[in-house]
Amino acid sequence: MELMVYLIVGGLIGVVLGWLLAGSKAQARQQELVDQRVEALKQDTVESTRRRVEQEVRGELQEPVREELVEKYSAEARAEADRLVQRLKREAEAEADKVIKDAEIKSRQLVLEAQKEGEAELKTRRLEQQKIEQRLSNRESNLDARAERLDEREEAVKAREQQVADGEAGLAGSQVELERQRAEVEVLLEKVAGYSAEQARAELVARMVSQAELEANRKIKAIEEQAEEEADKRAQKIISVAVQRYAGDFVAEKCVNVVSLPSDDMKGRIIGREGRNIRALEAATGVDIIIDDTPEAVIVSGFDPVRREIARRSLEKLIADGRIHPTRIEEVVGKTDQEVAQSIKEAGERAAFELGIHGLHPELIKIVGRLKYRTSYGQNMWSHSIEVGYLCGLMASELGVNVKMARRAGLLHDIGKALTHEQEGSHALIGADLCRKYGEHEVVRNAVAAHHNDEPQNSVIAHLVIAADALSGARPGARREILETYVKRLEDLERISMGFKGVEKTYAIQAGREIRVMVEHSAVDDQAAFALSRDIARKIEDELTYPGQIKVTVIRETRAIDYAR
Image (cartoon, rainbow, N blue to C red; front, top):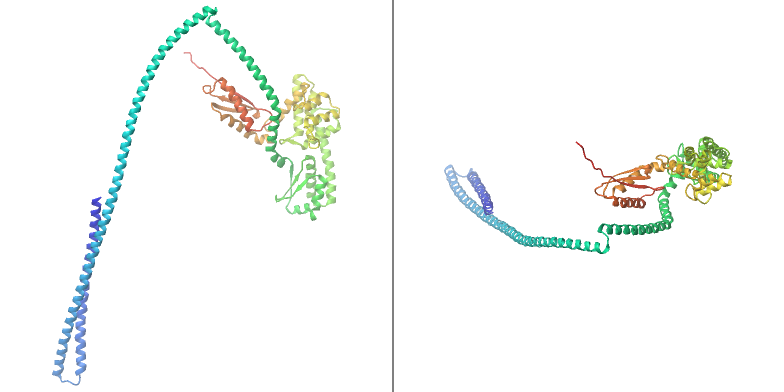
């Protein structure tokens, strides 16, 4: 640090000396300029004096007198020039002395300032060094104190270990003595009771098992009774939550049709003057016509799919024709209504013909045809009913049951969905009432009413309808909603299962109706496997919404492998 201060002071002194040297050079240059100026003044003075004398005596004085005067004035000029030179030299010397003195004063000031700065810097460095030394000293003190505490703790631990070892030795001796006394007591009890220890143990175990079984049966019965009491409430809650979550998308996707327009100018013609055309179209079809900012499209909204179909066809005809006014609208809607009614009847007859069903009431045929314009989760109900009829017939032929009646029940099982928006009640009971009204067999009526457990199943065909309905609706791709959410539901099932400790792999199978959970045999025992399946099932119930039920299977496998050589 001191070396640094000396270097700084030396550097400042060198700067001052350089400045003084530059000042001396400047002074020499100034002296040279003064000498040149003095010589010039001398010459100017002599010349001016000569010219002045010549002018004064020109033409008046004689030549000797003129020369005498010139000499006189020249001597005076030289004397004046000498005096001027002496005065200028004195002034230059005084100015040089002043500059030198100022330089010396400034150099001394700079040296003093450098010394002060060096001393301040040195003092600051010394203070920082003292602080660092103080911190190091404190840290060493702390380390010494910590080392002392560790030594004390180590001594305490050693003493504790010695006490534990002494206690274990004493405990071992006590256990030996206790075992000896227990053996003596057992021998004495066997003599008194007349039973050996094994016989007494077996009898005690048998009694405890019997009591545990009785208690378990009582608890199981109580749990089942409680579950039956809470089943309806919980089912209603789950269904209401599911309806709430799905209602928005359902209305947006399932209750509207979109009609394309050749251009946006057609929207004005559909609206008509003061809206008379659109009012006439809505009154004739019974649906709402929505004209918004959607380019080249008009939305037909309504809950009745048949009316929506009539409105869609009528609007397409009017757009193609170009003549749009109230009278033309009523005419086109009337013709379209007849066409749709005829297509509905043909669809019902085609469904009955494909399944080989005869003798259906004409009204039932029309209602079956209306299913062509109904969907459930995106699956067309007309195609679904035909598919269920085929499946019921196949299973009935394998079981030796009436195939035609099974197909009839399968075709009509969802017929109530064609009228659920017109009548109150579940579609199964509405369909059963229709079957009774139009003279269908009791087996068919019961199969329709019981396929969602609204009433007990009274025949094998009723169970076949339930199975066929599940097969047709649950297979991947059958329903658009399931197709869109199928992968997401499987991912959610596997994600929930993988969130539990000890789970190694999970597989969602049977279209998401079963989840297989592979666990590590070392982390999950048999009892924990039962608890794990129950916990996974409860979490799936809390987080997911799904139709039917999901089976949770926990698989724990232990493999013992060896090789014979």
